[in-house]
Amino acid sequence: MYRSRIGQSPSFDASPTLRALRRSDVFSALNDTAELAEAAERARWVTIPRRREITPDAEGTVFAIVTGRVKVCSQAGDRDLTLGYADPGDVVGEERLFGPSIERRYYAAEQVEAVALPSSFVLDLLGRHPRLATSMLRYVGERRAALERRLRALLCRSVESRVAEFVLEVAARYGVPDSRGTLVSQRFTHLDIANFVGSTRETVTLVLGDLKRAGLIDLDHRRIVVLDKDGLVARTAD
Image (cartoon, rainbow, N blue to C red; front, side):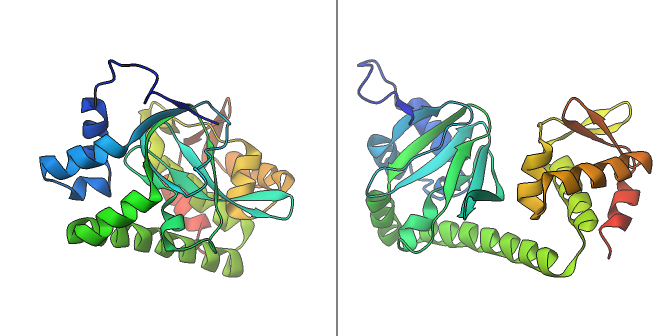
């Protein structure tokens, strides 16, 4: 499902892999050059086209994202619910380190480049390098906390509140200054938003229309422009 540069070119230079690991939120804990070189030696540089699933090897693979955006999903029946998005510096596939009971699926929201490491090798690194183990635990804990906040929102808050919070989150993460306010540089379809907030595409379309008529947002070719941040914050408070 992805293309690997390892084994395809005898002139492969490990330095881009080393640089990618140094920028990783998790693997940057391997701050010794020899430790990073060991990881780079076992890594594969992979390219995943847009909209393709990122498929781990049979024994498991941890991916350190270098470029692009990854959609993290969990399948519920015939529907993929979006758990979140991973950006450059993030890792995905780490759940397989803790057993097969956690099932997630990953899709390239745009073309993605990543450093792929075998799960067995990452487990060995975690056992030998306490700094790396601490870094991984922190990363997993942050993800769990984010999912718990999402769960509370699903149980206790309206769809409008959840959509408003989604807009605020992506504006904080991907926003760029715009003459109208803050432009969300990444595109999200109404179905993308519905799968994230736990609703339907039709309901999300209605809510976005209401927010636009209220002067809180504008819609520009599937990109959202935040016009009134304080007004959106008020809509998140049920």
